[in-house]
Length: 223
Length: 229
Image (cartoon, rainbow over all chains, first blue to last red; front, side, top):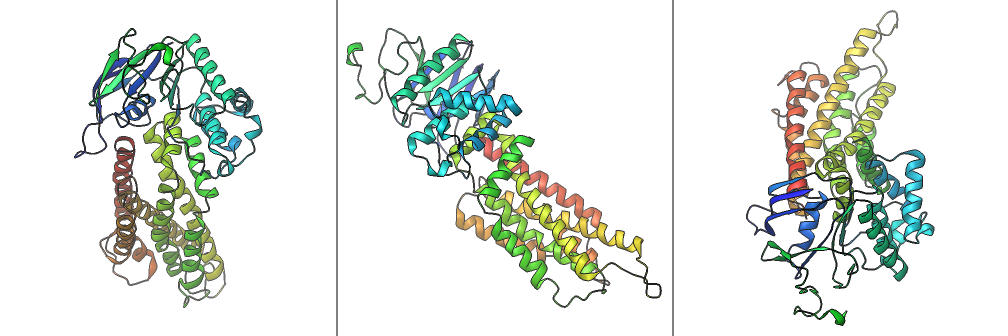
């Protein structure tokens, strides 16, 4: 998929959150966005996921998309399985295919026992598992993760890392933001830095990531 | 679109936000609505009541739906189904509920007021019954559409401040019922009382109501996709 000169602002009188962003996300690519708080990382992810349309420019060739938002609300009046069924049906899944996709996504994150639990009664970690599970339902395609690891237990974090690696191997693309500089460091990622509403490609030898680690360049062994 | 509407409908139903508008409709139609109407006195005025109550009730249902979904939950479903289609589904769901209320209102009026009968033979005057019901259903649909258009225009995501949204919606509902240039007012008058001056024929009111819905739903959808977050 491609973003061509994409700009986004949340109102005609408001400043541009991102501006003139052009990039290509080929099948099988892992893309990481970095930047300070409020630099527009979440906005770029929302535009890539198709949650929000750009104010300028166009986005083309988006495959079936799963999106994990920054903060998933537990305040929905559904049990986990009921909620996941709704999202699965929006993705065009039905019947046994839907049921087995839901089981597979929950099992993957070690959350099978969550199926009957109402979202309202869930802890942050539990509802984060549901948030990730709903994004895995469409299968290989585009997976957009906005700090999706936050709140997950160690096993689920590791499982999500594995899922990302598998998706990439199957030809899916994954776009993510995470405050943890070492996240998915074992996989080869294309890194983009957002600064002053503009995005610039970070060269692989220029390891200046780690927006939560004090801002400065960080030696490899510090992680 | 069906899966999206089912999700939104389920959200509205399980959030119990439809109950207060349902009580308002029941009070309006079963209680206050034409307390002076008598069995055998003609269906028109009763059907007019069931139709006009749909304007505030549908506006309330639509506002309930548009404020029921947390932004992050909307983001997840919009990634799956597209932000525009999801917003349309969120406008369809309360319209389906409002239509069910309207049908219940029509059925209640028929039971309470009785079908039109010939004075001598007591035979049901089928032609008159169908024309009454057709007029009542058309007026109900016009009122439903007007209520939906008002709420789509004056509630999130177009108007976000709760005070402005609630006052604006209430004011627009009163205007839609009282001002004789409004399609809802014209529709109710056209079936309500014999001898009432008709402002517009029902067909014109229907076209106007459909136009209002098309315009306001488009605006709401546009804003949901572009100015969210």
